Image (cartoon, rainbow over all chains, first blue to last red; front, side, top):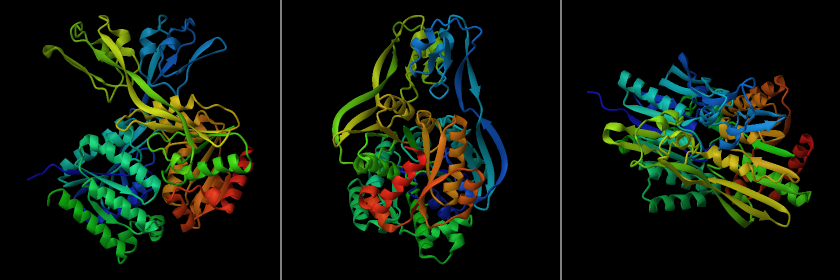
Length: 296
Length: 282
């Protein structure tokens, strides 16, 4: 019997709170699991997974308008219509600012001289790989290209397909920082969000906004407080606040420099230091996730 | 001079450096400086600055609304929409705009032959103006929670940069379009990284982006002491200047947690800010 794989997304709002290290630290406990790195701006999970790349596919990375200067009659219609201020006029020439252009195509249809066309770019990549922990799917952005949520959605879609094909019970997604387009694309339709935070005023501010965002999708959330001993009082305040909101704190992780040393060797913490007290903490977090998923 | 403070990886210390530079310029050098918090998804500069709010400006886009009475379901709007934001089922006389996907470009209402599309303003974020002491401004962009149009909020925010004195742009993490929107406005890109494999991997992506746009750039290494030699080897090979290293210290991490500006609390950080600005030539 094949159950639908249960998809867990690790998010944080604020960057650098420890999403990737948490995913790597739990990776040995998950059983049959497909991993997805949706921080496509800065995918780092592969640094620990050191996977064998099976295949790469290019993926749409945005569209940009281009003006054919031979055909352009300098009427300025495009500039008047563009809402993204992406059309510049200088030295008697109209040109596109590629950093501002959203590729909407309005200028293309409006140009009376038919001098504008939309160029589609395929500079983003989808990477399929295999690792000692299981299959890994991740995205890689073309330099300066659009991190549309589309690449994030595509990474997740492919991870789901892989999970179904291989009969995996779990999909563990390393999510992007922030709460905008890529973060929204990693949450929609997921089964559980694990929010990683730290006891700092910024950490709480960012978690609060993240929880407001996930609340809109009604996705269940569990919180992990990383580096809790950096400011114990602040950790307690965060715990109290979460208790009022009826959100479970799955674990409090102490600040541990050795995690960085493990990382330098391309290992997860349990691999580098199997006897370390934090290993039990990560195992416990995974156990709680299994409980939240309903004793699978 | 406009300095963008960036990092590929999140949490390396962009905001720490940005507010420290701001404090140094405003309080030590007593020069005009404007700080712009461009991390609109998670803006944190205000946590560190006791600044007086002087105004607010809403950022909106024009979202179409389709009058099904006059719509003939010709499908031209759906055809032109680059963001797949229009759903149409002609047999059911159903047509709808998926507001979360809409970028407010106006292409659908432009092509509609029946003039069945009107537009309403929808808020996607806001810009808050602050005054810090007498002469210095601080601006913050803040994405409305649930909106996916962070880059549009950033672009509108950047239109309020005044260009008097030094402008510090605290960028979002990453290296894609929201960051490019910030970098493209800057004269200098200050890249903050940390000496770990993550830091190096994400810095490489940032450097490629900065090179493609063609900006002058340098690096600040945060949390030195956890030393990871491949970072320094790579920086040397690539000829990228390291302007300063901020040592790892629990007292800095604690002060950051409490919302304290490091250059205000620690003279040695003030000295580092001086070094950074001197190297940039500001």
